[in-house]
Length: 447
Image (tube, rainbow, N blue to C red; front, side, top):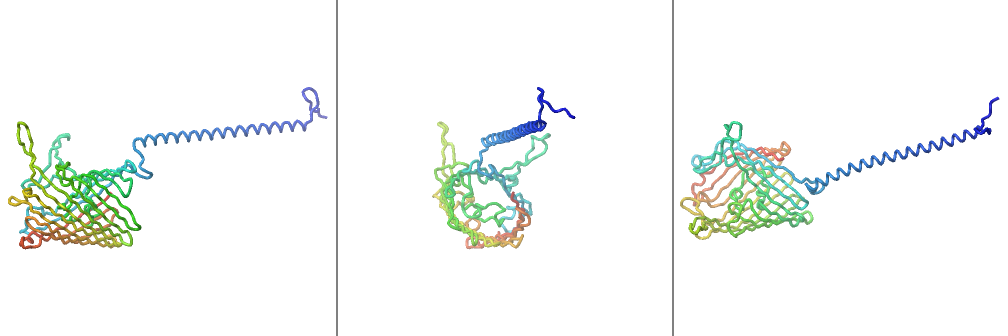
């Protein structure tokens, strides 16, 4: 017979009651363990949250520092963008022996460094944009100098290890550089050095955009100033599928150098309308007016010292232009008409030859380009007539055909054949003897 369980004080105990007590104690112990595990889990979660918040705080601090140096310009926008275009050429001219250009203009087949243009496009804030376009060139190396001799800019490189090698120094062309305030689409303010807003060619002057490589006469001879240094107001608005826009500018005009040498400013403007559907059609009209003066400065006296500015050139000019751009599927048309009238003051005409002075003149020029794209090939025609009195002739016509090969993305291969015709007139019965032919092949890319 077993000995019954007894309490330490000698009182007998019930075994069932002992087991119930143990189970109660174990349950309490389990609840305590679970509570501790819950508290530990909360502590770990709090630690992870604290670490996450600390990392976010560090990132926010870094972003704040970066924003202090480079302010945000809007979601997804870049503060500064770099892009550009380039073209390289191979060309050849053919002059008849009786041409006045024979021996004056190079007619050998030659490779040519065309355009190497780079853009720096900055948006420091949502309302400010600054754009600079620079063209790198080899000029003046190889250009015509005094006495028709070519300019040689080769010099010894004195900063090299031995100084024995030679380099050719060259310059660049500042195409444009301006700052624009653009809070409103209908009114933007642009100040600086800008392309004169007229027509198609002068604004879309990049070789990847233009169809023809042959330059129209009004652009080469600047019937409108190509660039201006001054102030421009511009804007556009929409009415249904149509877009309307304007440009108005005030600038130094044709003043040589960076400053205006007189109080006469050039003024001009442009208006346009565009319909994007069912065809892409743009019609535009432009105008400008200005007075140009040139001075010769000489020493008037030495005691007291005085410099006298004598006016040697003084004339007023007025220009008007109209343009059309039409795209119908793969068919493209471009056309412009540009005119310029110059009126000189008595005794203020520049010399154009050793025996003659510039006369008052009215010049006008028009061209038409038509192109149609068949897959990767786009043939085109270019026709131009330029009426401008000179000492040698009074008109020129250019007839040209060509093609563009679009085989690679952002890259074109252009080939153009042209004939330049100087028609015989009553004043110039032998002008046609200077007519000539040429071709130009150009590899173009944008980046």
